[in-house]
Length: 468
Image 1 (cartoon, rainbow, N blue to C red):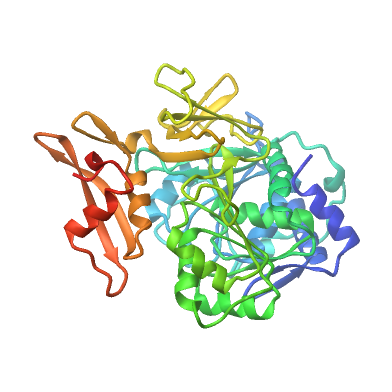
Image 2 (tube, rainbow, N blue to C red):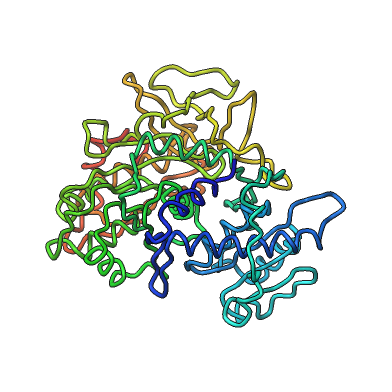
């Protein structure tokens, strides 16, 4: 089964319902699926012409801003049995060139010819949507594609940060996302009636997943070209937005801009991921979105969903919640043995959402898969009530005087202080201690603390050795 199957069925029943809205365009479900099928027909024909000796599916590179065509191309690749490759326009030009050549991307689609300046591509077909959009579409749809059996289980290739500056590629299959859709529907209860605003970039997993899940369920999706407050406010005021899906930094920008100016009672759900929400934001979120439930989930590109936290429920505020639907969690020591309640260990996960490996290998660091369990080497623990706490990545631990200090734990304590707007904790080499803990702080306006005051306040929240 492909992730597009339910979208095609929904479009057949509700062809005139609005599926996608961006600043420049709208697409009904009927238009969206028709365009995807026309592109899929083109890709299927191209796949036959460029068939490789190893029978590898055609790779379709997407180097695009947020736009309706991005979604149509992604759906088309799925229908045609190709594999989409999601590229980020913020990467350096040389890095894009290297990735396209290294992974032998067959077709690269960009917004504008300028996106290809200074990029030398030897074997890829290059299409820019400004001048050559018509190249993507066949004149007629090959209806057999809708019902054909596709041998390619792979949905797309995404990228995550590696231990070097070169991103690591991971492969997502149709099945892992179909399983994820089932699980997230249990947790978030999204329905066809929803108007979902996902303001992040489609090249990032949170937004792309949210868009595909919403379309599969028949919801209407709203996209921003870029994250800008005027566009956010316009959609919130005029499009009856019921669900927001975004990263905490965007939510923080919204609260800073709109607090005591405007509220939006139509928003019933806010789903966020990427980092822990600051406790100081929660009151502001309640004021601006008085009827919204607030969920944050913890996960990773390689693992998918891991935990979920219903923020306004009586759960420990500094935890990342309980295991997500369909997920088993275990903490282990360095000898791969389970640790006890409250003991810090490496987080291992077992679920149907986990990738099988990096695409074309990886650097051997970070992601590990063993006997059906996977880890990205996050450190944390489980409390007596079963709630999960994430402390840090193993390679981010500061060892000072032989003791482990986790920057995230110190940052969490700092963010609990109303005087602090932003902070960063890091280690610096020290001839005596090995490393010492350093803190960079940005204060909220007019709320500076002296070093002594800061240490006194923090000493009530975390051990003293973590502060010196």
